[in-house]
Length: 290
Length: 267
Image (cartoon, rainbow over all chains, first blue to last red; front, side, top):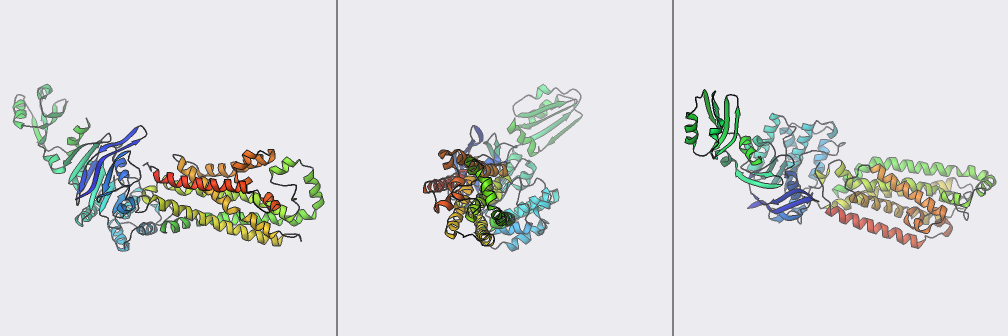
């Protein structure tokens, strides 16, 4: 079953394009990455799902219901962590969380304590006295306290130290195991790589590719680094080569295809060193943006 | 209901400050009446030496002298109108826009509630706060009328008719403030808008009265419910009354409608 289904979703702010023709689905129980540089349209897409903004055309349905028309009903089961966290400054953390809980027909007190313990969040401090990272934690607890069926994370990790980030990821995995579907927006690939099953790549407001994380890496891309004094870069200009770069005595590139071809060309030079690596996701990913 | 309670709680401090200032101001102003009465003749001479337009500018009326208790009370209320209007505008302009200005909209609007519920809860919370102030004005009006009347007869019916207008004055500024806040892309200065609205219309009303320009007078609730006129006539000007009600209904409905359609943008 599709938990989220975008149907040609388009949003223009006057003349400015927010996103266009977003058309993909997120399946139940999946952790879907949503990746693209800043300003690519991630937040626009997400804000439409929450009816914070309204689409120019197209639609998005969540749990099989139109996200705008059935907004309040659909949002019962959504936990949302916005990218920038701001709360009523003068409130105590616990009061804010309790206020948040009053919107749901569920008993949330235990979960609040549980989440706060894991995230090491002091419930009795005033929100205005919290650091950015601690505010982020409030956001996380606030987003998860009603055990939602769909968790939407918009750049959730900024401000969290690596240890907290791991704890947070574990929390998300745990929620996912308990049946929650996750949409994880980020511009940092390594995060998505750690957590997600699939990833939708957005550029200039349009989805340019949807890939399994596994296949994205196994797509037989190899990263070659050749060292030697007289390597002729131009010999490597063949099909399947990307990101060809030369510095002093080093040539590096990504290659997808029959590696024997590369070996043949490489054999014509006198090399001092050669390494063939799995490229990082960042490297694979960059070619979508060139 | 939870939003209503929450919003009202957020307003408590504001209610205390506005409530005590307005009550104190009203009481203080009225406390001077016995002194003015003592020099009744001198005051009458002084006032009669001013041109009628000048007196009109300050809301005084030749038919109900400033030196009678009800005339004095009317002028007092016409001054009390100003903070009442500014407070109502302030709530109107800020209650919805505060969420966007302080970026809490991402919290509140993503909860499982409709924009309609948010609008109504916030409107009712603000209206409750204003009603508390309204009740205080009623109480302190009668307290001061009874305490500082200098032995003159109090026109209770007139006072009740006059004080009944406060709720409409408040609703006017509250709903117009709300409408402004959803019409503009982003409210940068709540104080600016609300002072502009509260004071601007007061000055407009004063000029309207001074120059007797009907068109201008029809625009502002300060003239719709001019206290001294109400006390003289012992009824409302029903034409103005109607205009006021129509503005309230239109501002409220349009504000309500536009808020449903509003795009809440990210930072």
